Amino acid sequence: MTDPILIVGGGPAGLGAAQALSAIGRKSILVEKEAELGGAPIISGYAKLVPSGEWAKDAIGGMVQRVAGSDLVDVRLGARVTEFAGTPGSFNATLSSGEQCQVSSAILATGFTHFDSINKPEWGFGTHPDVVTTVQVEQMMSSGKGVYCPSDGRVPDRVAILLCVGSRDRQIGREWCSKICCTVSANIAMEIRELLPDCSVYIYYMDIRTYGQYETEYYWRSQEEFRVKYIKSRVAEVTSDGNRLLIKGEDTLVKRPIAIPFDLVVHAIGMDPNLENATIAETFGVDLQKEGNIAQQFSYGGIGLTSRAGVYVAGAAVGPETIDDSIAQGQAAAMAALGMDGGMVAPSAAAE
Amino acid sequence: MTSSPQSGQRAVGKLADPIGADAPLDREALEEIFDDIRTHPRYDSELNGCLNCGICTATCPSAHYYDYSPREIVQLLWTENVEGIYDAMQEKIWACAQCYTCAARCPFGNSPGGLVMVMREVAIKHGMESAKEVLRPFSRVMLKVMTTGNQLAPNMITPEHFPDWGPNISKVEAPLNILRKAIPMPTLHTQETAWAVNLKTSIELYTIWEESGVLDQLETMDENLFDVIVDIMDEKREDYADWLEEQDDDDDDD
Image 1 (cartoon, rainbow over the protein chains, first blue to last red):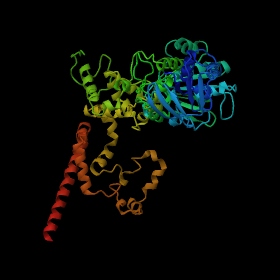
Image 2 (image 1 turned 180 degrees about the vertical axis):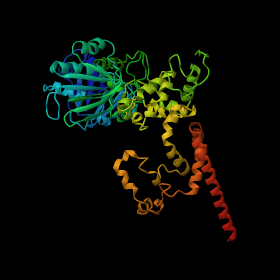
Image 3 (image 1 turned 90 degrees about the vertical axis):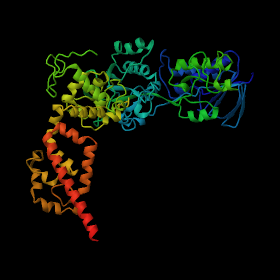
Image 4 (image 1 turned 60 degrees about the vertical axis):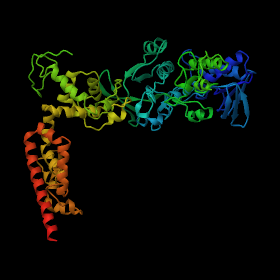
């Protein structure tokens, strides 16, 4: 069991696993399909993170530096695993470069795919340039340009954030809650209000799910300190009167249909299963659950076990997950990969 | 559920506050109406739950013009508010245009428009005055649809029936037979119907009205119209039987 441990994916979960393994002196091979490490927070250019308020490039960037600087982590950028064969303790992974790696186990930290708002055409993304996603607003802020309307670069007077875009929607086959968007949206709303004190920010919601400690720090604070307005309504459509965007919705608490003008409309996009999950499942011989995420075997006791013994999973690969929990799961999967899996055994191993 | 049996008689259709002291129906009768809705074969597939997000009402064209909200209908049914359901059946459910945009938008996969249709069917079954009122202006059209399968015949388009057309109505005051003859298809050279209706097709249509229960619904809604239509149906069926006999005779001659 002295072969390195294979980690697939260099986002928060993969970095967490690599950090943990290197901390106890175990070698790992970290395979990342993109040209840089960091995953969604770095590659998609997130701004200030929940819950610490640190910039993604500092918080996650710091992890990237520590992992990349470790002698015990062998990083392969722009690479994929194309074949994976063997048994626990002695696997052989083939990379897209043709390289063969002997590894004792594997951790899938393959993450998620941002929902593509084009799949909700009635909400104007792709039709009106001033309809953007939370990821685009994160990029505006992290790039230092500030929040602006893409059509003409003007600073918005009125911003609407629509929650549950690509989440909790049977019409498009996405019945799950993406877990992070309520808190992320409250965070973004406060940042906009901080950057543009004269700008009104509205959040359109079905339910507010700023769970746990986020209730006071994000949901309440965004109202009490930042005067963000919450309207209980799922909007019917986003159109334009030629100058501004129009949001047609029902204020369900006042009980009348309303049309309100906005300069910028932000889709709080959800987390889809990684688009490549079918290929990943095929390559590694692991099961997917019904939504298309990588299936975990146990809810309790076992850590990140997949349907194949010796292959573990962490982070948003199993479903919508926060950055901090993804890192924790990466570390937990590292423990499991070292053999400390709580005595729980994947079905395939039990059958052997 | 306890029900007070004090005022047992039904004043079905009386418009009144269903919750107040002079409620037209007792609790038991209201629950009977709701049971007919709840046990309708389509009910469970039209209603899965409700998050009160309001996208149905936001997207509803009728909600912009009438005191009608598909979200309210869903809520009344989901919370089994039998008084509110009865109240909505007096007027609100008839404001729905049955466009089903609500169903196309609902994140839960509900169909508020489908629920309205179920409620309308139950309103008819119970002979509610609201249903009768809604149908009354359509008796001419009903007569035409049920006897011929056509909705509107050219000779029905007259100034007195279409005041909303304004001065344009004069355009159809030219001799109807000439106007119709100008249409290239001979099957449209008709005045009594929109197109030439085959007798056999009409007879088959009558079977559909009977088998689907539409004829029974009509009897509940408008007995006079029902009598007129049944007379015409009988007449046409006799005509068809005679025609069939003629065919047999012709065959015998061959």
